[in-house]
Amino acid sequence: VVSLQDHLLIPYIQTVKECYILFYTTWEDRCNSVAPVFSKIADKYTTNQRLFAKFNIGRSKKIQEAFEISATNGTLKQLPTIIHFIDGKEVKRLNPNIAGEQLLNIPTIVKHFKLTLPKNN
Image (cartoon, rainbow, N blue to C red; front, side, top):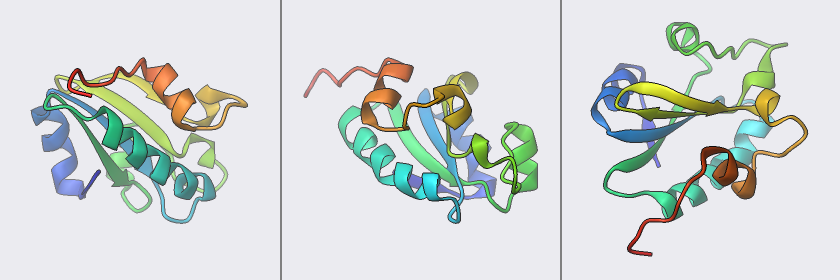
């Protein structure tokens, strides 16, 4: 899973045909627990057309506003957030508010995004 910097996030989303971006912070426990899960999903579901990346949104107000994700204390129920993009447009997102009581684990994430294994697996 590639880690994107501020100046690379938008070009990445616009360039990659289909991508899943994990928006996280380093100080939020849920983010720290979902990062390895996201990496395992990326290892299993990446294809030439479907890529996975992560972005530390904690210090980027501009990106928080652009993607409507808050990393401010008291609103951390939005983190971690995974957003699925196709052709540069958001298709679907998943965060703890959307998942409800479900943990952001492999089965929940795979089911939410209806991920399918690559044909060569």
